[in-house]
Length: 381
Length: 135
Image 1: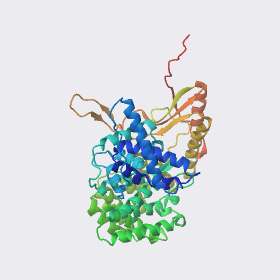
Image 2: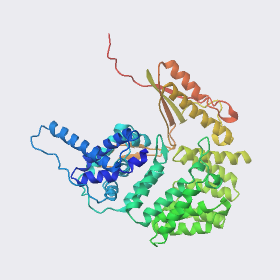
Image 3: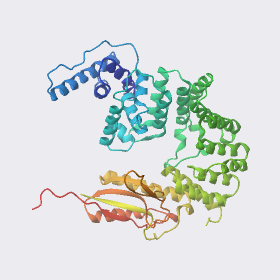
Image 4: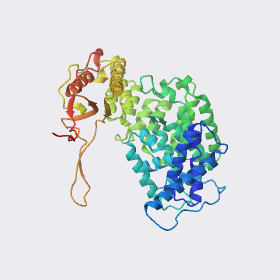
């Protein structure tokens, strides 16, 4: 049994321990210990009932920890919780809600979700986010305290869960853990326990973006823009899956921002060549998205789509109505001026945009664009 | 072992010898430069001398306490600051000489026409621990 499969049992097992009366923080530690043991032992000696094995192991660890704690406090009274029956209810959804509780900051919610729902170790999460393990351990333990008094059976808000999963997906991957793949796994799992068009929309969005991953960076690590990507490298199986999930979601006629974003990603994925992209429809989806979110970033992306659909002048006109302080505004302006044939202005704007970029890959990409234009004409002053 | 900070500046260091801004290079020259930096860090990871390397954005601000109950004062973004740090690498090496050798190597990263940039890097020793045995 591979590690991801073992980890997929995490929320079900944790839910059972909590139902039996274990408090969330202690139960979560116990499940984590049981997972580590399972990953060590199962390859040699796979159990017939993986979930039952994990419940038993986690419960034993929980009892051991409780006893040790009791002994440490030198208490006389018997505080060990009684072992109840294994209930049929699946508390997976409740765990998603708890770990994305609005009382938690985004970074705590992300960390707690990856550990208590995803079954990742603190070390893996720390590595993925490039912080010391002790820092991540503290973040998780404080998060557990924050939600310690939240009743487990309270209904939660799907939107907060989706925001957490979206954040995880966008972090991409560094080190051993592929956070994008992990976010997809967790969103798939969420989709099995709740029928909600935005859950499906987010899953479709992730799959459609993940399908293009191999084509997004060159061998030297530099970014490749969508129009320049080798579409033969796109994962057609993931695209088909994403499109199908999206179509089923859209059929429910409850549009949300993730479905709209996925629809845009699907239109890109649908074009065999960049120049065959249906930009008119993409602009329409951006209009829907702008109605749903009123986000200036959406209007910035819309300006690019307008330029592709109606020409660079129309795009520049749409851009002129936006705040120049928006992130990536200058990069978009550079691109649109280049499309409009004004390479000299574009080169200068690319340099300016590179200076404002919020990550190295983007900074290098924008510098390369400036360098490319400067090779063609006289250097920009 | 002793730790050294190799500091790279956007502004404030003396001008490098091969002083052509990156947007005037060819795309291949840019690739070669980035590859050199990555290879350098990988090499130090192999030798067990790498501690950390980070790059900073070009923007930021000055911030200070402004008294009880008041929000902090901010000044900036520091567009006019004479000295602006671009990033660092922290290395853990056996001697000052080794730190200087490595800084020299890093400064030889290729730039315009594939020639070394010869940029100035600041090398700063960390304070070490007080030794346990002092006599």
